Length: 470
Image (cartoon, rainbow, N blue to C red; front, top):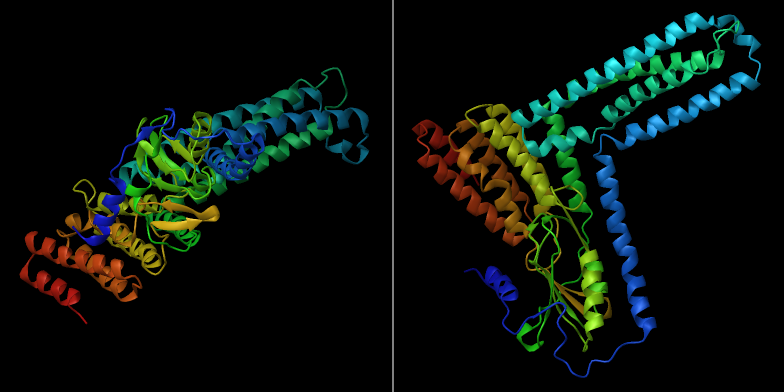
């Protein structure tokens, strides 16, 4: 076993008695701290926890096809009431000649309302078909790119708003009056024309958005942003966990994917001079009862303190039913790899798309192998030590990017050639020794896969020549 893997395995499997959270501590000299100290600790953790919750809520709202249309619908209802008040209280003689008779206005509003609600149904159907095609042709993981699109949400909301405005406007028309409300009629027409323009813009956007290059570019941009957003604290030598006494194990209370994990919150939740080991990582599936973190407090704790720390540590974790791009770099790599694998599947067989996915995947991986990642042992404020043995390192990111892809690319000489060239490029650009070793390994394994895939000798010679080029 390599030294780095052995070190991380020892961290996870450190010997010593473990005490499940909720049991009274073994230290008999634990003293209840002043109330002010507990309040200060909660106040220190609260900003980090609020930031996590706000990011989670924002991500859910961004992916919701209901939130923005409902907001637009509410605004349309309020706008109709406001325009009706203006029609009753303000004289608009300059536009009176553009007014309609009440019966004509009723016909116009009824026609616009019926047309917009019918079009809304067509747009919903078009969106469903688009999601089905994207899932079948690319990957179910890329569907989030489509339902996060603001243009589709705005169009649906605009159609619903136009319908609601026209229906409410019908209640404002007095059939016994000489003229229908001018501002109300013109506002409904403006909404109808805006809906027409939005439909054309949406069709133009969705036609372009279905191009695989735009999907890959969107995923690559999000992933690169996460890479650059990482903080890299000063590393320290990991402590000997066998000398720290019995730990406290905080366990997950539900099943789900780890969408967000805030290390500052974890650290702030424990007393000074404590050791915190995070037993999961971003993008991992965590079942209820599995460890979130193992804590070695720097001072004796009471049962009440243990319960408080447990709650604070759980606030540092956000779980959900699907992986997201809030912090998950590996999920970005997964999406691009899935597109390449789907393109190489017998049901699709599109090597050109696979080559394009390999290019974008290599572009993102290049950023990774040129960027320092957080160490697995760092020192935080208050002489606390944070251990993250489960966090992915450069070698694991490289393996996740190309380990599965090389098996399926070996049967296509063009894709295999693109993969070998990308690995060579990454090897030359790598600034991290562990990443360079992982790239060398992937390059060797890719050539071996090609040799066993039954390619023609000419194709094999070309691949070997590229792999062995200086």
